[in-house]
Image: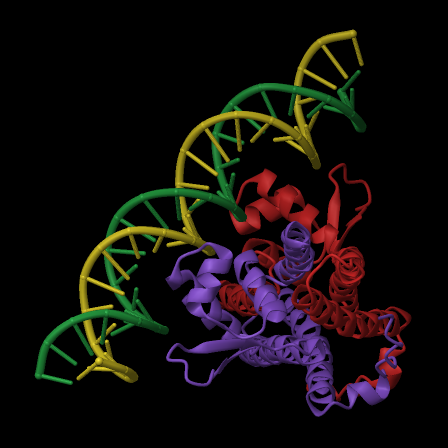
Length: 188
Length: 188
DNA sequence: CCAAACGTTAAAAAATTTCTTAACATATTA
DNA sequence: TAATATGTTAAGAAATTTTTTAACGTTTGG
């Protein structure tokens, strides 16, 4: 009894998962993560911890693809290795707290942005200063150099703010400033 | 007098700009914007308003590339059309307030993320609920459906928080919560 | 200590994306 | 109104990225 119902239900269940996994993949695509890595993350998010072979089977892709996909997700700090008792194969688990995902993903990028750009600005401003202080350079060029110098100088405030934002997120202070809404009652 | 100095100075100045433009392009690459669009933005940021032909010449690329590049940047709300007096050609200007850039760029993505995912979750949860309430489905499958339902339910809080964050940024409240550091004195 | 399993790396193939050339539509000016 | 300038679209070419197959080293279990 209910055997055929189970078959249909299984199909529905998988379909429901697919909808959300695709949605997660599309979202990650927005931020420059490839769709397949996004699908991988989404799948692990809903299925729980998985081995490379389980991923391969689920996504219908090759094992090296899974391996490199997982590696990329690990770079973003949203997937970690785990152990499954008695199992020989390595398993991996997706960060399933999206707040933590947000934190790990964006702070890493913003930190890098601030660092890289502040460094470039320093380098560029040094060059510009040498032009500005060189008496053999025409006033027109000096003025242009000064303009560019100022544009760069002004942008520093942004990168410094970005670093502050990163800190507020890493310490969790951000959730004092912008609280997470309390959970609603379950409907089930 | 100083003519050869000017030539060298011009070269230095351009080099200084390039360093920062490259840096900006690399940063935008981090967020999934192509390097050429990033370079385009960075160039406009330092050079001021430009026509498509000026971009073409500066970047050494074709005009249609410039056209599509600008269009993409407009989608991200970081480039706008402007008018240059007496000029027939259309000019474009890059958002040169990085705080505004940040706001325009990320709130758009986060808004989309929240909308797309909340919609998918609704759709998926409807399907899952039908399984859960179907008496012909085996308890094992029901339980799995319920587990997945809960995972999805829990994630809603994140998307709601994301919408709050977007609002705080759009209204500028975020800068009350995380103030921009006061500018330092000029060194020139 | 041998054999099989596992995961990664390397090279080749496939797919996608980006860019260019060419054609087109629209608008401007003479 | 004709001729030219401007920007976009479309189709093809080029380049890059992603994926797979194959080979390799390492580990584990018999």
